[in-house]
Length: 232
Length: 80
Image 1 (cartoon, chains in turn yellow, cyan):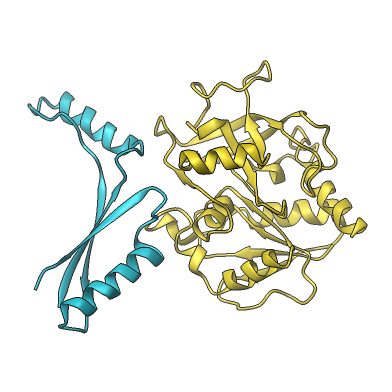
Image 2 (cartoon, helix red, strand yellow; image 1 turned 180 degrees about the vertical axis):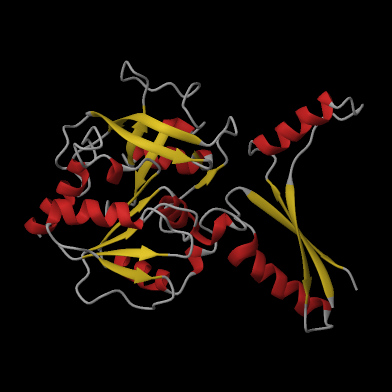
């Protein structure tokens, strides 16, 4: 698996995700600077890491979404290439038009840094094939603007097309939109593109891959990607 | 010429920052404030002196970067 991790000024989770990719696939990803205009030849997977690209100036992810490398990412996605945006990476994907909707300030205004419970809504995607359908997993969250919002029509389309891949749930495994930690519409934590090849999610699977740290629920996401690419 | 661009959240979009400011004004005892919505102001200087051209440039800037039209609306004011 050839993966590329994009690095913007202000990214800070690129090391974590590179480590997770290396650990699971055995191959170190290429680190690609935002001002580059091309991805390394043969890139299978592009990862947009978490952080505070451009200091969250203007809107989270707004400036990074217009960086030179993003044209190459759009072309990669249009070819069906895999793209994973985590946290700030999700914000960048929304701002760049690769995913619909937007992430706004958390409903209760607090920066939330803790573990979140998520439901994996489907396992027939390249990102979730190593999870059981409906599995409840624990990933850490760390964001101030993770409140997913879109117009009613877009939300309906996402639901009808089964494009909500990860949803925040309560300890009993059921969603509660009134109590969801950041106010996200329909308790949305992660969505995929129409062709299922672009995933944006707020929580951090890359931080739960090593037993030394604690749970390893995030590992299966990276294993899914490795599996999907081996099959292809 | 100079222009001012105002970007505000659409009325249907929840504005938690505006709400917090509203609450703070209330706790300060500032009377008669029923609602606060927070937005952004961009003061822009343009090379052109043609208002139509300025308006077109700023509209382009808003659509491409200054506003996220999923949640925000913008207003362009030509200053002089």
